[in-house]
Length: 279
Image (cartoon, rainbow, N blue to C red; front, side, top):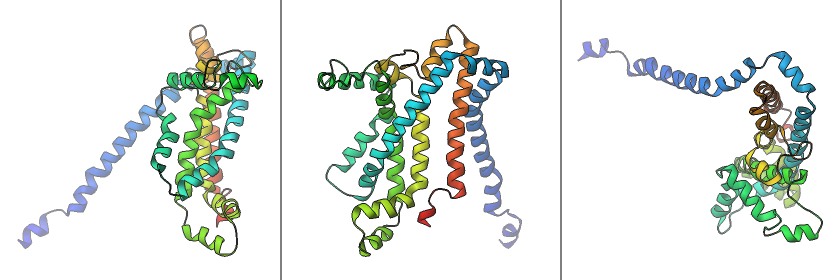
């Protein structure tokens, strides 16, 4: 019995041999599948194509419109979504799970369904269409419609991440703030938001990236008119059939902008630029 125990390899050493290798193989497969299409965009786009794309007025108009409308959409999402996420994370109320499900529902809606829903709500024949038209606020086939579409598809990303960030806070911090005489609003602004800022920043990056890449709902609800509603994804689709190299070049620029956004947020979070007030 003792001889067998002496010669048998420890169980941990055996597991250490194949399981980490399996994990590494799974990661390698995932990376190859996810990174290859992105790499292919840049390898098929020569520097001259990128430069010519930047000099193309249609491409620059589309990029400008994408950045402007997505920035406006994200600003609205942060202003409305931050207190909404705080409420969902820190309060219990009847039908809360139903509310959370409804808030997250746009995450799983097909883009065409999102566009149809926006038309049925805010279009000329929609629920609010006549009232908006009478108030002089048409929300179809114009830049405002692009912003509405981006908010609809991107807001759940920020709300979900914001809810998780607020839920992860130590409740004793909030209680201590209230004990010291701070009201609900001051506790939210001076304690909860600074402490949750890294998570909120991650949600902002996800929402902004989603807004930059939005296509289907924007096309159906706002249309594709150069300089008015044609964002970068719509311009890429427009060039796909006639100028594939131009579509690749514009795609590479959009990937670079989205990647720079994500890396900037990650750098700021990692460097401690966010959440300094919480420490």
